[in-house]
Image (tube, rainbow, N blue to C red; front, side, top):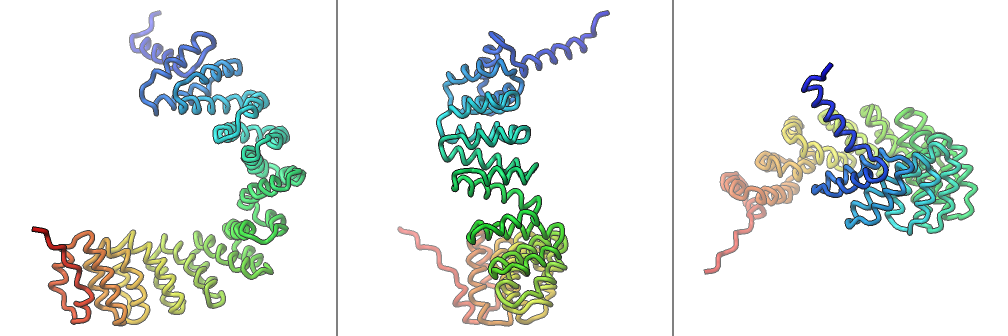
Length: 411
């Protein structure tokens, strides 16, 4: 029985694809390398090296590495060798590690470590850890220690911590622990805190406190709040509470904002409220703005409105304008217009200028109108000058609003 023409075409195409992506030993392997090297488009060529490396057998790998060492372009050599080392790490990680260990220190060696260590740590963490510890040059050793720590803690935190605690070099121990904690904290904030609390005070501990709060609040904000309030260090406590509010507000912005409003008046309360309102603004900006009006004092309102309208007036100037126009005249509206001016002047300069003229606080009108007109003039000076000519401005506003005259031409 003979195959149909369409069937024969399909079979030929399948064979061609097989030959392209499946390297063979000997002359066929050399031919495939030469064929890829001949591809003119560099993006195409680099992608083909990656595909080519994924199909290599263990016996092919030394031949390909030897052939690639003679490449004229460093980029091709590095891409192919890194992909080959990654393949080798899956087939025979100890052999691949011996090859990488013999490389001179540098970024290429770090890339090769990144290629072999994740899979090796997942399958044989003790071996990967022993190799990482044995590297002589500190920068590459630390790169390896960090990779092993991050991967091992995801599967067995106790074993990973025991390994780190046994490292002889104090600086290596601190580095590996830091990398481990910044991964572990997101998976197990409560458990990781028991180790974090033993760290000395400093920027890294403070960052980890914030991470604990953020991760814990995603699953149990009330437990996170209780933990934060138990912290003896006042600065850490404030950082934790602010991070809890910001994380919590992703899911329940109203509840998070209400909690922020219960915090003591001052920077902690303002920052927490600003974080909650900013996340709320991504979901329901008008609701967030109304809440700010009803529940925050004027000092906090100014800071929070800057965050709210900095986003809203830039992304949705029409919606922000409609909300502003509904606000009753007075201090809150003035604060809102002041926060609205800079982002909105790019998109709705005429409406922004008109809103500025409605401010109840005369001291705000001059600087805000000047700012609006400067921004407007950069994008459409003719329209800005036309508006100025027709606007009913008092003498003081006209004086501050006059844009500079264009330079006289030299004759």
